[in-house]
Image (cartoon, rainbow, N blue to C red; front, side, top):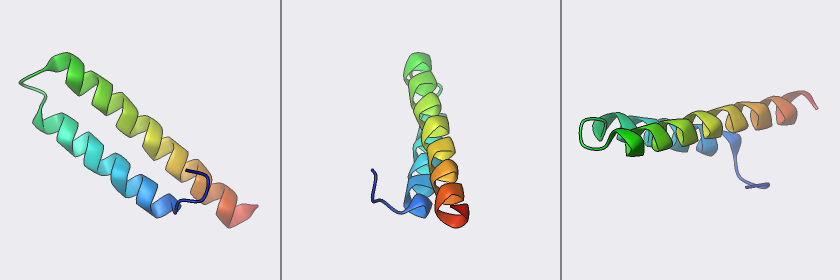
Amino acid sequence: MNYSNPASIVVASVMVTVLALKIKDDCYYCFLGMFIVGVILFIFGLVKYWKRRHG
């Protein structure tokens, strides 16, 4: 993930989070895991974008 585009990481995190919201009723722990992964990817993408932009 070192060379990937920050925008694609953010888009992927949003898609994972939306998918997690769709399966919320079926499996709560799956939802929780996917939601946490989505949030972590979102933060990672924003940090990577910030570093590329300002540093």
